[in-house]
Image (cartoon, rainbow, N blue to C red):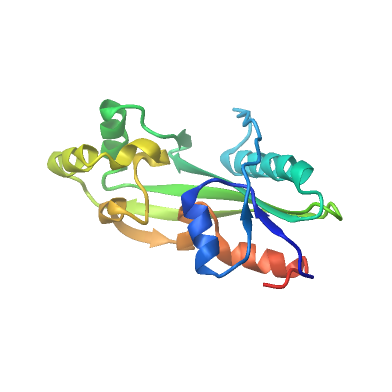
Length: 191
């Protein structure tokens, strides 16, 4: 089945993953208004938000295959967002120093025509090196922490903060591509 694939995300990292796999796709902002339900566990929340994005995009593309995702950083049971300032970035990086945390991605792959949907969660565990105050100050000075959940990214200078990763690297970029690829095949999409 040759159908248009819509990546319901404006994330440059997710687009980069699709391009690396040579998948023909169109990028669309789903326009979904994220409403965070604090009662949901992290795994349930990312699935809920991914499904909301997929349904919103399906209204604009009723014959397409929609891929939507939501990703969060989880540390000691708390969601860690994007630091708003230098002090917040420093607090996050100090907490992560010498510790591990999870990056959790929820994905919804929706056949908008048949309404068939497959939703899943993937997680990776990231171990940070023990960071000195000098390491943290230098990283903050670089400006890298401020537009990324958890204050770092895996495919840039933030990689230097990490000692070990357990799981699918692409999950940490916001789209666990192995599972997405297999899910598209299950839906009969020719890639």
